[in-house]
Image 1: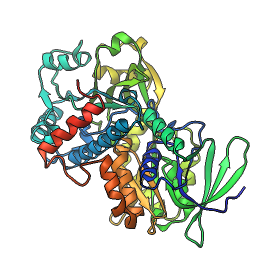
Image 2 (image 1 turned 90 degrees about the horizontal axis):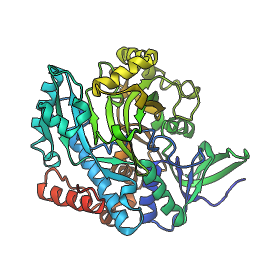
Image 3 (image 1 turned 135 degrees about the horizontal axis):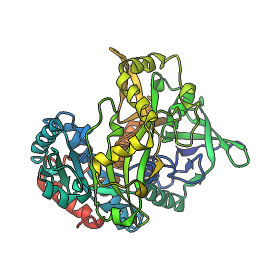
Length: 488
């Protein structure tokens, strides 16, 4: 079946990125025809699913990999600023009734960092001294005292050796975000206002037409029928699958990119007695050779009103780009233009490959010992393993090294702005709002000026650094906390 009249927007992928961009575009152009295609039978079943990520609400309050130099807070500040935009956006949509009761998708939870090596303690102390001077981090606390840390998170100290060296930081400004619930609510609003959502529908082809539109080929996975349609603008928000689709589009901007997939697992407990003793998200320092996304952390999760604890992730090497992808994803993505970047990354990341091999070979007992370093009192009978989401780290060309492994989210857009895709992972979902604003400015430069007043209704501090305006930072965070019910 072929559709002749072009639609205005095609969104590929049913996660938080497509949901956020669709919400923005429907706001500024409610008359635009938007069609969304998701290859699974429901939205938010890959990286946006609450059990496929730790739902941190990344704001750099506890994630040490955003601040490798304890004297340089620039990256941490950038991520926190971005998360404040997400909070403003969600708060406005709650006020308008677009989003449901906020506790369905966001809840307050302390963000902590815990380290137990002398060099890590010295690093954490220096990081604290830097961050406490920043308005966005003014609530951060630091302690090396066992009694104080036990007040914050009893399980971290319970049965721990008395002569052990350790330190922790804590911030009450942290959150737990259920991006699955958030995505579903946004898609419900989109479809209620005219957008069409197609489930079990896989986009298999993207071809630029002479008139500048895109021929989009879609395979219906239930019934195996095919459909083609024309689109004026295409957004590829399909997680690791985005690389395959951007390659099929033929845009030169996607050449040279690769994806390094890393799988993962979490240990989980739902035992209410254990869960009741831990009310925080606690991050540690990464192991030598481990990718930043594999930093060990113990997270309290609130999903559908029920509390659980997750510990991990335990990394693995699986050539799938999605959790429900194919083992042929990685070999199928290799092209002449990205062979050198792939080989360069393999050569320069031997410690990472060794780390992943070690993770794959680890026994259940070894895996559990990693948890017991965090929680000495952990009992194996309380914990079980779940499969986490697949993370696809960006590989890109580098003039000096040939190729580099990049951590973060990469926007890949055609020069004419008619198609754009996202590659990469963390902080990802937590910064979906500023990432999608970047997409809109890149792909619709002539329209952006006329859209900006409507965007400012959703994000009043757009273009302003909160950290450089302490009074504005305080009032903005207080306002969003009140609407999102984040006040303790």
